[in-house]
Image (cartoon, rainbow, N blue to C red; front, side, top):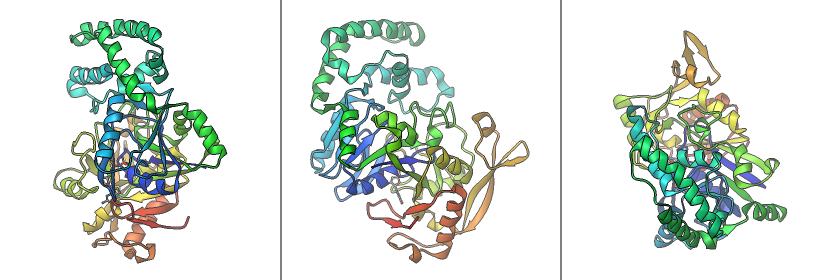
Length: 426
Ligand code: GDP
């Protein structure tokens, strides 16, 4: 049985917390896309953690954590992350890395930095983790699979060939120092030794595990609106953030994914550039930002203040649809307890017309939010365990959102902790 946990919005919906929670009754948790460019914040009995590359299920002794072939694998980063967990008292996790995962090279990070510098004010707001250059190379077929580290002669030859191309760009486009192929080759041999204990034919492993009835979780990074095909292109990430890609990025049949738990945030937040229709500014935004998440809305990877706004029903409905959501987890609802009235964006006004369907980017840039105001509940809902015990106005807000997103809200998260969750029947 495979379940996917994915985001309906722009990321930071709280997928980490839901994964950490559901990992308790899972056997295997798989990261299937992205890299160390976004983080999941998890608060559990071991402390507070910002994970970037490891799946959020690494805290249990019984789970296997997998880095699938779809991930941008930063090898030293992964090793550092494993080590830092152990240093903080978490038992050594069982980690497997796909032999088909591609390696995030030191030059991917440099190219990311150089390109942002070159674009200046027109930059994409990259986290400079090398993700865009990595996926560009993967599809240009000049990436390096983990398996290639184990054939020294072929590796050396390929390093020389790739450096020739990279160095032309470095010299003529960016005016930066060239890469020394010999040095890069040595770095890759170090990477090989670091990753060797974890390497596995992940697709075959999952095939066997599923035959044995093991429970698998696929953990997505970012959300629907950052998907390169269905999101706010070009202000998107470079790998698919959709549950459907979980099949490819983990190496399992698509029909195995039975449940698509789509995490929907009770208000909006986004990092980086791009149209954000329900965005708010000034004091109103600062108040929400300060109260948001578990420590305010500041990026887990970059510490950058996140852009914030009201719940966007147009974007979230689309976000759920494009994920193929079978159920929704509504998160960070507790944060909204301070408001007298809670605005929700229920339509986009584009060229004088109100639309309900999420538009393509060129139209989106012109959209203005149509807001509907719902009454606030004016109290702290943390600690509440039963749906019936939530204030009426709060349940009304949840049920309003449920109707808008056309997906059953089966979980309501009312705090960052592992146990701060209210289950509802479908
Ligand atoms: P992810 O990338 O989707 O895993 O999300 P992040 O970890 O970046 O962002 C979610 C933030 O919200 C983290 O700081 C979480 O600890 C926090 N969080 C998650 N669920 C809740 C919740 O229900 N209430 C509150 N107050 N914070 C939450």
